[in-house]
Image 1: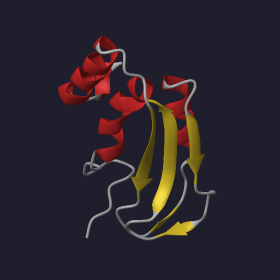
Image 2: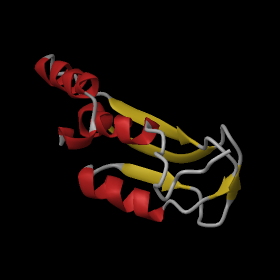
Image 3: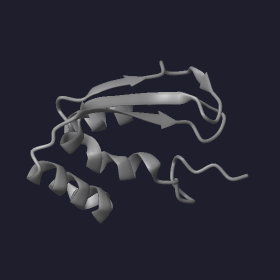
Length: 101
């Protein structure tokens, strides 16, 4: 899957598998600015990539502020570690998620 991930996360996955380590993990995704939740497309994408992942999101239209948990993802480490890059990326100017100011 490493089309959208840093080599660090791919290597961490390789090390975990080589050492027969398959811990359950829970990632939390936090809002970076004030907004209204619209996370259903992200949830569907994650579930398409990590088919056993348990994904919880704020209901559409729910307001959030910086630091609020807007999504949680639970699964085994090796199944979701490569998703971490996507969740921590900063939106780039011109993208649908970019917000100036």
